[in-house]
Image (cartoon, rainbow, N blue to C red):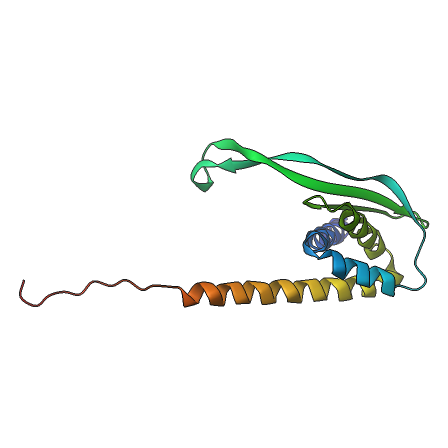
Length: 155
């Protein structure tokens, strides 16, 4: 029984990771990967795509009392494949088509025959994100100033 719970937890964590990376994928990455799939499965909308607002909360000092920071725009979609798998996509911004494609890839990830396609997309997105993070770190390091105190010998 514990092995079943552990495998389910691993699957949920894997799907959570996939959904997070799909949300960070560009619309072009998603569209290109979708068009490369042959034959494409039947996709039926369940909800959306739709755009709305959510309240972003913060904490004073990072761990103190919560407060409302403000609202941000989010888009979400839910789709069902012809084979029955349900996929969800949600992301910051108002790109409804991107939310729909993210939901499709979430549903496709649940089908063993499409898992390699989704893994290729996720690997490409992850590589792009790491490259962007590395470039940002290099640009930040180039502007770093090291302060030090010199001790005068006559005091």
